[in-house]
Length: 310
Image (cartoon, rainbow, N blue to C red):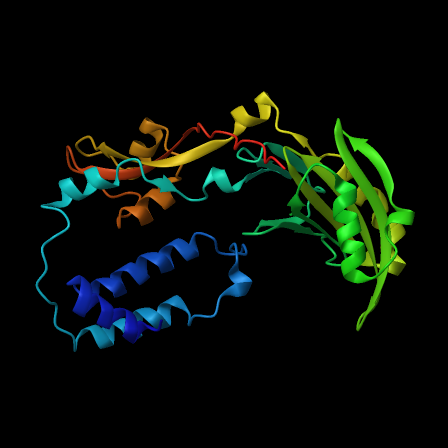
């Protein structure tokens, strides 16, 4: 939806002040500048105009709109902040988290160590990491339900009409049933080597794919094997490392700055991040009992899903 459509929705259905969208976009621009010099997650999927351009366009269009009457969602600012207390901030640990190059999945109960310094991303259906030279990647995904990796290999063999089983090695990886093979495929970019490992865990078979040009496969084969063999059930120590960030509302002390408040309450946000979240400046003197939004990291209690039964 473009900015004009967004503003019409705000006017007709929500009853919000259309000019507030421009204020929100300005805040979004401040948040983006905090990441100056670093690629934002999913930035290569971005298709919208630049934030500064959107601020100008939405502000201009909002001037021609009329706010409709609606009952407020909160009686006042304090009541609104009470409603925000405890909201999850940032990534949901249930989807899995990265700690350095380790990927920990508490719901599915596993961990995997990706190669150091590879650029990793947690997607909806897979987790992928790309080599620094962008000539290799490792991808993790759920291949099927079941407890026999060879069943997945047979199904893939039938689908591709290619011989896979005869070159597949059966093994165990950290006590889990597994299978491994290497195949070559030819595409428009030339010959590609695929290092394929299937691992059964709690009723699901996971597929770990290492991919590189065939001419570079020897350089990466050891890395692919090391990654696949790092797959293991999530330990109690690993689970305890997983934290979640929750929004907390705190009261400022008379005359303290955001920087001082952040240090006092052990916020997970930096003073700059807290300033953006509260539409303020780091060195602004706060009034006594002023309500301030902060983020606090805490242990998360995530239950492992029951094993999938056949």
